[in-house]
Length: 367
Image 1 (cartoon, rainbow, N blue to C red):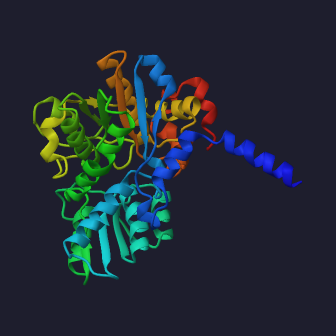
Image 2 (cartoon, rainbow, N blue to C red; image 1 turned 90 degrees about the vertical axis):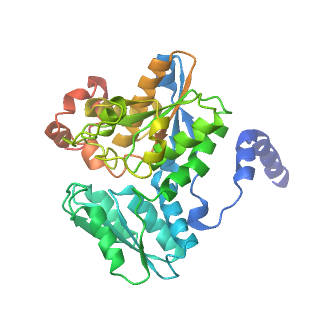
């Protein structure tokens, strides 16, 4: 029996992936939740790459421990408050967020021993609100109004922090620690994972931190060769702002995507706006179809914002031409949006049922 067991062990050792072992050694162990943030894989999207003749990659940010790219921003805005002495042990972190930053903050706060208070538009999915409360955050869903309105969720969050002792409003939209997270982590990771062979990068923006930070890093390290494009949903003004050379229109309409699109140029985005080569406007019809394509063709269960990013990467690859490499952000999975994205009733209510290719409608399993 001992010999048999030894033989089985030897066979298993021989079968172990040298690459996997190398990655595991490099990652080692981490200290708590915050140590697990970042260093996510870069996934080549096979079918879309074949169709375009390019290599299209998605940065698997849904594999962060809090489930989205916003873990990075959450960690950095808290670190920034600590470094500046704005918060002491046992204090309260307050933020206005459409969801994922709040979830990241709730995790980080539990890990670091802070209280967490979240203000968010009441248009966000119930799943996000429930999860925030399960993570110990105090949540205030408030009416969705424009940023200029004093009752906007960001302004309410700021006022809450101002009247609470040992409290800080982390201000993700205009706190450039958000952008710093992506200059120091996301951008360098993508560049290293591709060995410096990257022709284009694109993603949507809400706070502007991801696009601005990754763009800043990639432009510097590539000496300007990597093209960086904004991807924008309906209802956002940034596509027209960039393509018109700086004309800021009034925000109208909306999108099924959550947490992206903007009615202004944030302080995170402002310093890098001139580095952005161009912009792509992505319709909800294209985004919802890509949700289903990614599931069917790649086995990736992605939310609408991730799907929008992939549509943008696909279109950028077509513009750059065969043989190029393009990367984007798979910002979170579909788990928090399943009751919408895979519901026939919801899809019909948004006029999106017909946008899904007929052979993919088998995935619409909810009423």
